[in-house]
Image 1 (tube, one colour):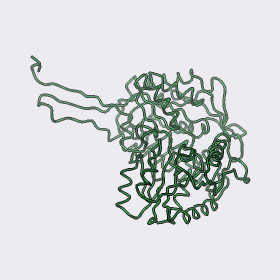
Image 2 (cartoon, rainbow, N blue to C red):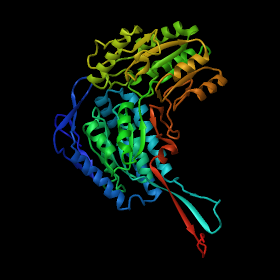
Image 3 (tube, rainbow, N blue to C red):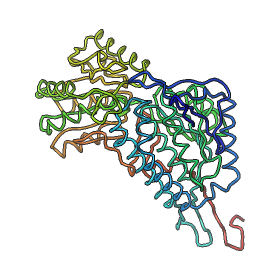
Image 4 (tube, rainbow, N blue to C red):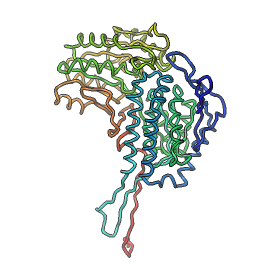
Length: 493
């Protein structure tokens, strides 16, 4: 990538260890707070993608990279972590400008966690182990080897344009895979900046890491359908995940798919209510609700409903709105006009279906840009659209309950099952509910906690497979059985 005299970033594709100029047209990414042009990026063609896949395929098939020792792949990841820390300020500013996320959250909740995850995968690269089964007869040595799955297609969204690609890249490198990254078009410069770090790592062979920008449907579907791609890892909407699953099934592609979420947050009267109000407010309004695990459905006990709602509205009004580059800012803009319009459409749908708007519901008049006010709907019924569909915006649906069983039923009344939270001081209750929630992640008396050591993913239409943890690494590995017979005679007569 290069920067012009006007400060605009010229993004290029990265193929076979070199930056490739666009072969056709370009598209723009703009600062959602000011409208200023941030970057231009290639609207890559299928020919561009073909060259990237071919480079990844050739590098994997020559055998040298997949056969690299785990300690050598670990060293590459350790160097990547060092470079990430060295470039943290620059990357944080770029994400804040291109995506609109407040810069302190970019540093604290995107770049720092990404560094930690790369360090985790550096350690994991040295811990990949097979098995020897002792149940076999003495003359048989029965081995299970763990080998890299092959060429991986990685498709990532715009809401965490550095962290989400690095989760996948870290696992792919640790396992010994090669990959082609297709980042989201709303923040291409932020994601492609990762390749600027990778090219500085001497031990990484050309062709291991490849990245192309452009139309998500065209390039994403081609990655899913191409038989040269052995695995597809996708983070995005459930609708797109279903389509990619259909295409990948045609060539038995290995799949890890994280779809959308509609996280239920259950609050009981015995909870630490001040802490719960703080967390529920952050859980839906952080990043302007542009998170798959945003706490979008508040299930609150009827006895505390009024006081809890008052506390949430007070906190929503108190959030500091401003430039994403200001360290004091808590609420930045939506990523794009398209996303803002989508959220406003859901607000109108909520009103039309009879929900009661008690906070927000419209863009801020100041400071301009694409800023959406924190929005709360009360009197929401479970069948309403705003209670069922992922809005991906700062819109909270409040639904009261009276009995524990009712809360569990409401929480599970969704096609999606990614994140959730339970607020209670009763440990027995917390364990009961955690076991019964049909989700991939349960937080008790907290929200937005993610650890590199623990797997993350969803159930039902929130996806299949996991990222992070050793389970996330295993998704990039295949098991191969090898049986060695030392007997002088053949066992079948």
